[in-house]
Image (tube, rainbow over all chains, first blue to last red; front, top):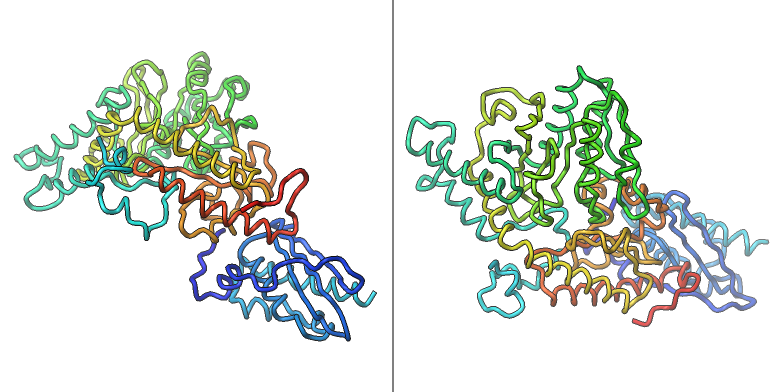
Length: 125
Length: 417
């Protein structure tokens, strides 16, 4: 179902402006993770440059509905400059509240939480 | 001539057509604006100075004037479809007409058998009416379409049984514009001696319909896909051989007892006027729509690539084109282009979360369906509007593809926008 997001809605702003969109070129200090939602085929990819225990640069790419793209942008903008532990602090519920996601779109926040945890596991591994 | 054909140049264009603050409306398969000539004719039926009386009140002159208007409208619709005016019953729209045909037809014929055949690509009005029949103990077979979105008469023939009493098939699919082989299907039903109902909501005034030579038992029509008002439609019920239905409503003898209720003169006259205009405009309008949809498709394909038609491009009504745009999510595109009003799958389907049952029946997977968009320009759409739509759609498609981790896909070029 296609929701209507008014201009003041956080999903709309992040979907239009997409802060943190892009991909970091492969390098030894760049880590990438990806998650996809079997329900609707949405895909979220996160790439980060790590240094001194910090997520120095965070970029996202997303395929899916506006809420999915907004979740990617929110994730990138929230994580950049923070410690790597912030990846495990990502909560779908917090994100859903911050972005005022309608119930039918909560799975986009779950996808974002998943991609963050996957990335943390890679860093730890 | 309606204003549409002069919209590029003429100075006397109704203001709403050139209002650039409104989105380019490419969703006429969902509903059309009411033609200004239709509005004028309807208004003349509403006020005290107009033809407002009850058409059933034939004991006085105002009532008889209203009845004359209703019969004038019936003649217009009959002329457009080459039916006998006495074969047309006014309803609240195509949905009610379809319900009356499918539910009323099957119930009337239940003594002869309890099997109904329809197709997998019908409008929800038919599919849901058939589901209601199943709850009453009828058996319903749903015939699949091919990957071109068309149902073959042979496949339909194979679904018929000795206890089949009714077949219900659409003339033009509302999502893809695919034109069904109504002549072939009619022949199959005639040979089997089974009553055929055709849902012509999307074909009325767009394709030639000649009920004097096409032996269908029943046909459903709507006004609001034809620049008439919402809330009015009609059911054709053949007189010879007589098509019979059990009424769904009770409460008076209107419309030969098949559809009681005070006739809505202004709505009926609106449908009649819409039919009259369609008769005059059909050839020019269809050529205009063919040019518009072709320009949209080719324009997008040349700008962004990866654009293909769902269904057989040569076997669709000119006014509906269903495009698959590789590498995008339809919901993101429709949200990202508020300047253009278009549908994802069908407007009726997009009110629920289910992906299009029509595209699914054509063999497409969920990802393909999510990247499929229906565009349906109309009588008043201009080439300039199409060019603007191509501009903003192409820009947004490129933005979404650049955001996508799945793009470029195998063999696809990166966007050059």
